[in-house]
Length: 326
Ligand code: ACO
Image 1 (cartoon, helix red, strand yellow):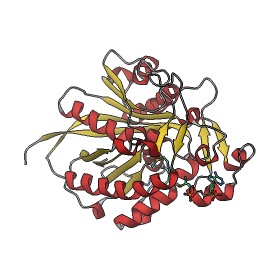
Image 2 (cartoon, helix red, strand yellow):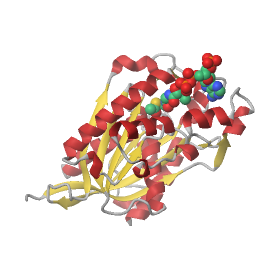
Image 3 (tube, protein in one colour):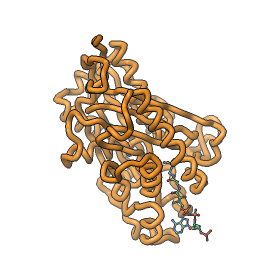
Image 4 (spheres, protein in one colour):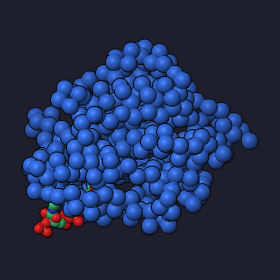
């Protein structure tokens, strides 16, 4: 066997804002009910960032916890990639702001915009830097303040989303080029710009000069999600050289419990292998996968050496999956 450089996840961390908003809280100002939201989505609450608390603050807190878990300090970091669709500012990139807040040395820092699939895209990009020897210690972060994109008069969207951040530390590790290696083993990334109208935000710096509100054709998104995610999972498994049935844990993007169940059923997955945090976190877009991963590592379900499959779909449409051994 020839030796290969793998990008190994050496630490995971996450952060949720203190303010919890229950379904009953939302029902006070928009015509909805806890019963409707739970039945259609599985969501029971979400965390909302406080006034003056930005995406970079959430990302910085998650990154500190990931660094601690990895036994690293900000001084070790030479690459920061943040997946976000809710940056603090149009520019500079939120990754650069986080670099400053953490006190990391001059290195590489930039954002990736692939909406809810952003974390999977960011992992793939970071893997390229690590595998080429361009990064020795990388932070890959998904961080969002989705509450800032909500039209709180639109009950069809405002009940679905929440704020939060999750981060992983990636470091190079020697592998044998087999599926027993620790690290990132395979990916599938997809985008289809013809489906833009299904899920989008109505503003932007170059078009309206405003931030805009999130709009969605929920039923259509749902139908595409189950088919597209299952396709990406199979492609990523093939690219890693593993069988889907061999995966220890599925860590889906947490959009809606019914999508999680639909994908599990289409792939013939045992539901007990699916990590679900949607009830407590709601849809935190690019942050949802590392948030769920961190929750299941810290409560002892996910153990070192296990095979994980991450998957997501979001605005674009974009979708994708990644296979890694922890
Ligand atoms: N409370 C009460 N009633 C509501 C609410 C609400 N929050 N939202 C919609 N309704 C009403 C609608 O107005 C409609 O009423 P009507 O029949 O009088 O017109 C009724 O409920 C049914 O609406 P539908 O949109 O048909 O409800 P559906 O069963 O499709 O559920 C949902 C909507 C939950 C959005 C679903 O389509 C879905 O989960 N889609 C996936 C979208 C998603 O999760 N996107 C996240 C971003 S993409 C991603 O991350 C994968």
